[in-house]
Image (cartoon, rainbow, N blue to C red; front, side, top):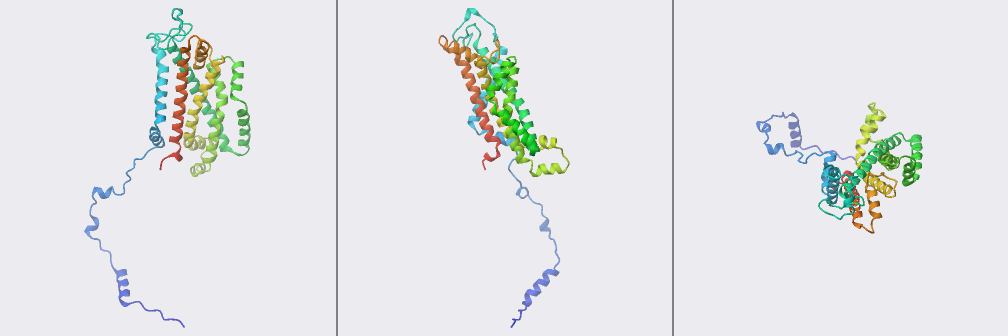
Length: 328
């Protein structure tokens, strides 16, 4: 019934036994020194790049973003240095040269009090930039801290903090800012404080969403296992990994703050005279538009360039800092 297993060939058995009993004998050829080409055969030739260096390389490939960055740098330099080196001041009146057209002495002309429009426009741009950067920086600190704590703690803490955020977000921004300016003394500090109370909501939402996504990652669990506290995990482990979306949101919030300040100054609730901002200059140019229409053009052009530059840079940063948009 059962077939008898065939015996292995004598030659095959002998070869196997010889292989088992063979002694390995190294030869000099096995220890020859490799040449340089053989050493670099498995070397990784791609340059190692950091996160921000890689993002900068992608940002430079975006031509519109680079144009916006160049325009933004030029406008910031002009707003800083033109009032410093100009022989005129933003509040210096010269009634003998009222409402003059463009000339060598006054490249943008003068207003109804003989004040140099170039200096006033640059000072107005400086005021708007200070308000935008200050409001965005303070909102960044408040929003990231609030959203990070809410996302990390979760549960009832997150629920209560989200209800507070929804109440703050439900009240229109202009209503809060206008009421604060009516109650408090109008000025740059009041505008920054009012914008700070409204701009942090969007920042906190992004921080909370990113925190909920990253707090269960392996590196966070490893840090918690090693005994790291909540403060260390939030600000040293998670925050560096969400810096990309945060920077993008900051760049989008700056032109929003500038536009809000310009609107408030246009309706007379912004920076008081004799100080000036782009909104107040547009308002003055609008009042004299029928007789001297050229006075409204410089502040509108400067504000349009600032808004456009910030949005182009923000779009470029969003594409450069988002790993999902990286070209494979």
